[in-house]
Image (cartoon, rainbow, N blue to C red; front, side, top):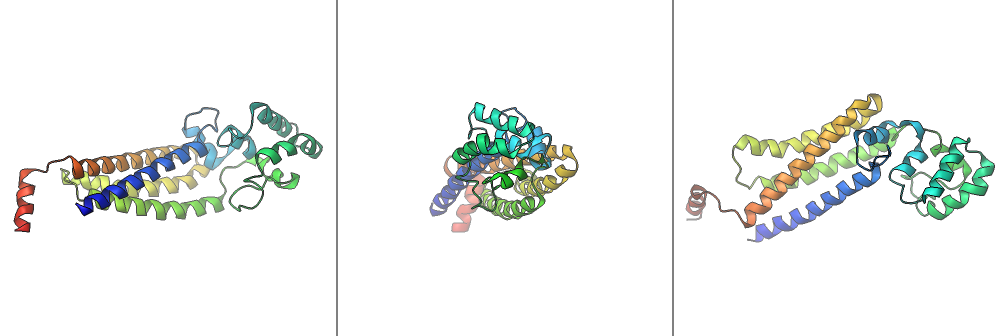
Length: 240
């Protein structure tokens, strides 16, 4: 019984964490192409960039769309399309940036673009080339370590479940590790060849499906499932 409560608490915490991770992925990438859903085009624009706009415009259409009013966004896009000149920045754009952006983008966080001042904002009104290589490397090792740890715990708990055929159970346990390798690798390949964004989407979806399967089966069998009679007899014999 104590292990049931230990495993249940772990599943609840990891399940909540996984849900927040999915929400974060949606909030950070969805909407870049103008469609509110998370699409392959969003993934391509996130890692490869866009030939139709700058990094700032992509952010304002996507993850930062809620930070400005429609009129403010249109004003900034018009300033960029007009050449992003310094005089207009100081009179029109700087007050908007100061009010809405500098709480996070003041240069204090090295992982966020510094938007404080005309010289700094020039780096985000250049052609959008997607996530830079240094950021990809930093996020890659975090994902590889973190997701491996999560699915090791999930797989360990799920390994106690009764699932037949055994090859199916083993496949569910092993597949997420293949998916995370394919997912992270495809971030880099997408910068070279846009269709690899499909691999990112598919690998993430299969990984989430395996997570849901292990979570639901483990939780159900711990509290509601009656194991086959021969297993109960075997366990009783081991206890005797």
